[in-house]
Image (cartoon, one colour):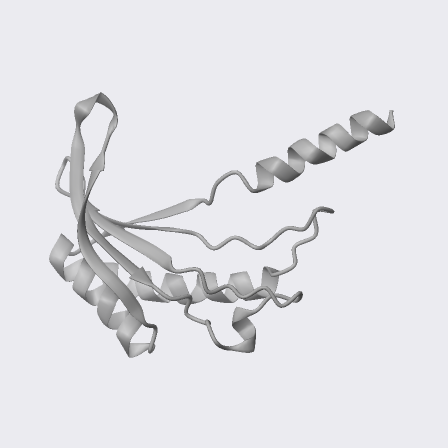
Length: 145
C-alpha cells in the first residue's frame, strides 16, 4: 500500500514540472507595433531587455511562421520579491514571442511563470509568482490594446 502511495506522489510531482503554460493573447496592432509597445512597456518599468531577434518556428506539416522574440529579465529580479522562501532566485530570463497567424491576426505569447512546488506538493513561491504574472499581464495589455 505504501509503495502505491509513493508511486502516485512521484507521478504527481513529475507531472507538475512537465511544462510551463503558454499564455497567448491576440493583439489589435500589427507585429512591429506590438513588439515595440511590449519593449517600451518593459523599458518604462526598468526591466532589462537582453535580446530582441527575429525567429522562425517550424510547425507540423512542413509549415513555419516568423515572428519576433524578446528576452527580458524577471520584472522583480533583484528585489526580495524576486526570491523564493528558500532563497532560490527567480532570475531566469523570460521570453515573449510575437507572430502573425495564418489569417493575419497578430499574437503575443509568453511562458507563464510557475510557482516552485517542493517534493510535498507545497507551493514555495506562490505570492511572488502571482505578482510577476500581474506585471506581465500589464506589459501585454500595453502592447496589444
